[in-house]
Image 1 (cartoon, rainbow, N blue to C red):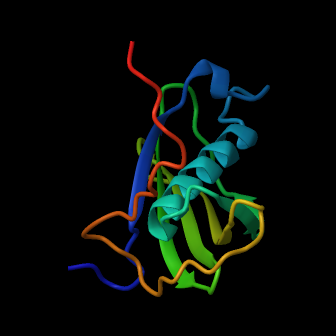
Image 2: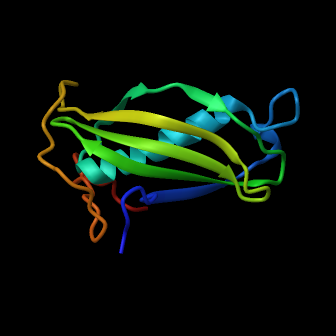
Length: 144
C-alpha cells in the first residue's frame, strides 16, 4: 500500500557521452530535459489529456552529478490537483553512488483545451490502478 510521500512514478536513464558537459559530468540541461519529459508523461497520464504543458518549475539546486556510464533514477510524486493543474515534486539520484543529484519541490502542469486555454480536468486524486490514457485525437496512420 502506498504511503504519503511515496514516489509514484520512476524512470531511469543511462548517462552517455552525448549527455556530458565540458567538465565530463552530466549536463544540467540534459537532466532538466529528461525531468520535464517524464513529468509531462506523468501529467498526461494522470490528467487524461495529451495537452498537459509545463507551467512552472521551482528553484533547482544541483547537489551532485553523474559521469559517463552512471545510471540515474528520477522520481516524481504528485502533491496536489488544482482545477486545471497537477503539481508534483521531483528527485533525482545517482544509482551508482546513491547520492541525491537534485530535487525540485514544485513542478506544475496545466491541462489545455484545443485552443491552448486551461481546461478543468475533473480529477481530485492520483490513479495507480489504471492510467487515464488520453483517447486518440486523430485517426491512426495505416500500417505499412
